[in-house]
Image (cartoon, rainbow, N blue to C red; front, side, top):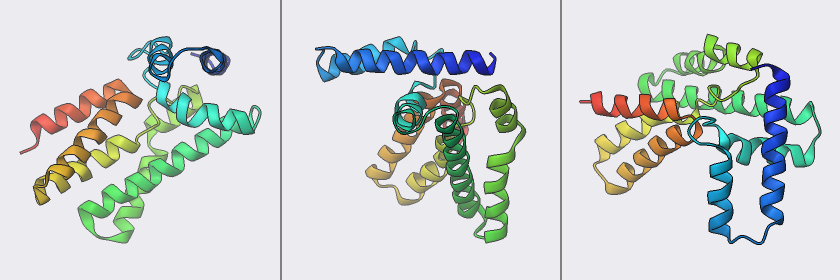
Length: 173
């Protein structure tokens, strides 16, 4: 899809959000309606529209809100990559390299260039191994719940990542 197609899609989701907000539906019905309008799992990144794109569009116009969204996603990708690297190596330089790789990997560069951004939100995929290792190490129910929540967020933000994280979980010793 071209940049124009993605920007139209964002505009359409923003219009849907505004229409739902102006309706007399209950909060539960509003959430269910919004998710159904997102056609999950096909669009898969409806949560980044709800929690990142739409709030930024209320403050800034195009192209500022779009560029800020890309910047925000990449900063959080880098921080999560750093956290994963730090949890595996304890070496700051190695963790910095992992954070940099999370930002400038070919998948991110391709998706940013193509303007889709659904595959660029790597946060939950990068945090899942940390949460899973923590749950295994501590053996506390709350850590297992946290790992499950991160797994759910992997799938909620991009359903293929949820599948991959689920397979990772299934293959973990």
